[in-house]
Image 1 (spheres, rainbow, N blue to C red):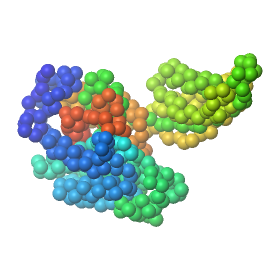
Image 2: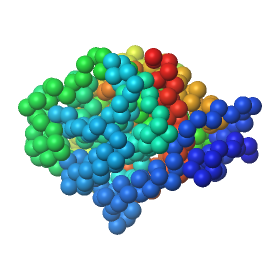
Image 3: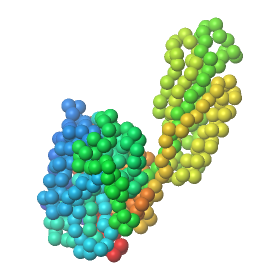
Image 4: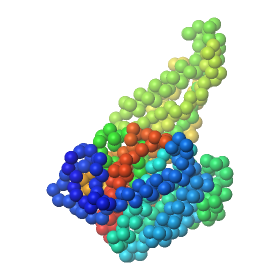
Length: 438
């Protein structure tokens, strides 16, 4: 394995990356590098807030733990010389002033809130790596041409009110927000320093942002399977989700001949297989999932009378999603006719995909190559703050490997080396964009 030499005290290339992940270069392009020990210490301190006995982390949006995590980050931002504020959507924003205040800002960040049994890296890595970028710039007395904003978006895991508020896509109907604590969004925003009556003012001007960059753990196993250190995200998938109701005829399991049955579960089973087949056989790379199945009366000696199920379709291309929806409807019509079971489909929600900007992806590739880190392109199949921000401004995402593809779990793990590599690529990408967008 060939590793280029940097200052091993604080900026060494990760020593455990595989030969595939670290490639030799004839000329090292040595620049400033993040401080790995400081980054990992920050991650450990933040993980202690909401740490559960099983090793998971619980910092639900708007909770006491979420407030504590945001307070710690605000203190770190102040200590790093950032100008700190909270907008009306509850976003915690630190601004590192650049040389030319008339230019739109470069932005980076993610979220601090978690699911009930969250891991130590989901969201928080992107925030604290952005903090480490700011610290490293300050340590080396380097000022970018653009202002640099570090953003901890509010409540990504539930309402996404923070990123939607900033992008101007947030609903002004408080009933549209299903908060994890079931308290009104108005009260929750006030708890973290936001202001519901002024939510629309969180929408940033068109010229406020030059580009947005989010570092995140992959939350899947593609990079690990490929042996790559860095994922260059092509875009965040759109989603189409439906609830389906299948109605049959409940009847005695012993006395009803097979040819006389209207078995709702048989029809539902055919739907499950059809959903699986249409995604696998599509020439693109969509995913389709039946994630919930409820059978009535759900008794061993009764022919199932009705089944409720959900179908989740995801792809980075809206045309592909439309094709899948059309095929799903055809399959439901066919299965209903063949089984004699009426089938009803009800849309639950629809989210359009967001493509990453070509220029931002190219900058990520260049930064990874400057560090000698192997990389490959892939979509993000989970939603992120970048999805909403990318609807307004050029967006890019950097993925780092998740061991075993596990996330939203106490077993979520990304190595110190990969965390550092992601932070280093984030720093290099921002510096490159600062030059290219001048």
